[in-house]
Amino acid sequence: MLVLFETPAGFALFKVLNEGKLQKVEDLWQDFATSDAARKVVELKAFNKFENTSEALSAATLLIDGKASKGLRKFLQKNCEGETLGVADSKLGNAIKEKLKIDCVHNNAVMELMRGLRNQLTELISGLAPQDLAPMSLGLSHSLSRYKLKFSPDKVDTMIVQAIGLLDDLDKELNTYAMRVREWYGWHFPELTKIVQDNIQYAKAVKLMGNRTNAVGLDFSEILSEEVEAELKEAALISMGTEVSDLDLINIRELADQVLALAEYRAQLYDYLKNRMNTIAPNLTALVGELVGARLIAHGGSLVNLSKQPGSTIQILGAEKALFRALKSKHSTPKYGLLYHASLIGQAAPRNKGKIARSLAAKSALAIRYDAFGDTEDNTIGFEQRSKLDARLRILEGKELGKSAGSAKGKPKIEAYDKDRKKGSGALITPAKSYNPASDLVLGNSTGPSKKEEKKEKKRKHEDAEEETGEGHDKEKREKKKKKKAEEADAPEEPVEESEKKKKKKKKGEEISENDGEETVGKKEKKKKKKHSEEEEATEPEPKKEKKKKKDKKAD
Image 1: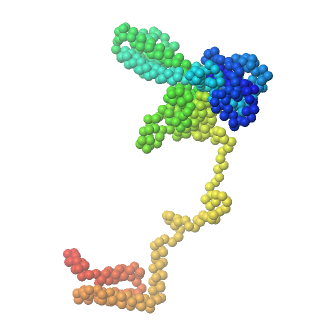
Image 2: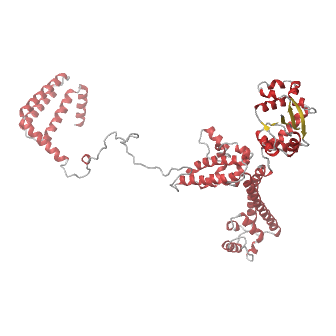
């Protein structure tokens, strides 16, 4: 039995001297405790050395994919005739068996044997020193790690970072130059600023026209519309601007040329950025657009770094200052950062921008990860997520009342509210109350008797009752007299004149009430009030009485 062992220097083929020891896998490590014991178990049969690093890298990458390189196939055909081969990878063993018709073995005994060979590798292979093996292992591992990342010049996102930075700088410079052209040429033709609003059209018009007196004989049809051209020519005849020299016009035209050159270069740079974004991050581009996607990658540092961020971080990427200020002042945090410029958020109403931003950030995180680590370069996932977000936006805006995105449920069933119905059982807690029209009150004029008539009827009934119960009335009067006498006895002594006057008044009142029993109720109430006032005077202390007397004297 032979064993294939891969090293950074080449392929080694060892022959197992005692196959019986492979049956005791647990004790096999003891046979590789020393180099002498290992030589009794295996010996080196053949070694295939790599010529250079590129050959080692190509062989290692093929082994990772479970394939045998051309040099390995020749090496095995030469040294493995009629032998069983032990390999460390089952995929590689299947490939060798299919192509070379060599029986391959991969089990626990072979893996334990590989572990022992790795431990005594420098002793078993003559001419391979440990100090030579370490640099070869390090160089091959670096090359292999770059291959695992699937390094490709088409996937370099640093070009996107630089391109979007340059595009932003060009926008600033272009705006500055265009405003300088307007301000400079405005001294000569100030009316042109209001007539032509676009900066590029303004620069082209200035370059073509030069002095405003030449505007009448020139054709601006390639630059401006017919209406704007007619307005420009009319304004040139009656312009209030100052005259400028030919040297000034030359410098103004050169500045206009710079504006046009920058605008042309910006258009080329935008096309380049668009192509690079469609190559590197097609799904992110389909979701948020080229410019927003490029700004996200530039802000994150790279596509791989951005793919490590969660959706919540991507949502507020670019609004870090506002986020920390809100956290410090305990206010509400921002809902979006760079994603605010995406077309989906621009289409949403102000009340729905936060919801769409959260959904867009979650879908963008998935698209970024697929772009960073996926093998294919299609944008199907991006367009699928975009269609779902469009459907969600329509639902939020109320434009579509059918099925929601990603759900098989239709419109919710709306039931009438019943406060007397239980939630679970459906039984009534209390019987429903019916409307009682008899309990209503009618305001305004009513058909029934008025309040005055009701009072008159009560008075009449009272008088009739008094006539019928004359004796009872006398008894009540006697009781009232007794009470009044008791109160007068408790009250402080009064002057003789006052007491006599009160007695006379009381006697007169009693005689009037006895003789005039048939008087109206209104007069009786007045008498009762007078009696009540006299009783209060009787019960009042002396100082209050003296004050009342003084007031009466002053009134006299």
